[in-house]
Image (cartoon, rainbow, N blue to C red; front, side, top):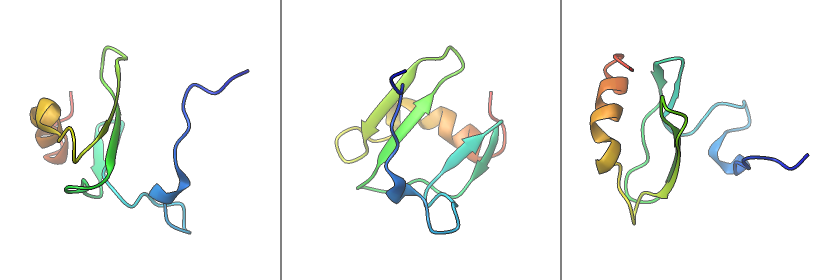
Length: 74
């Protein structure tokens, strides 16, 4: 079938580690890009969000990101 999403491999290093913030199972790892970069997110309702951080900073999701960075996701 057709893929639902394609992620640029440049967001990972040669050891397959993310070069930015990843939150998996409520556990944050890394840090968010500032200024340049992008964000792909899926909220608890399954709504997808894809944005360029220079055009659309994380402000609409900042409360969520702050909670997750503090280890209190959802």
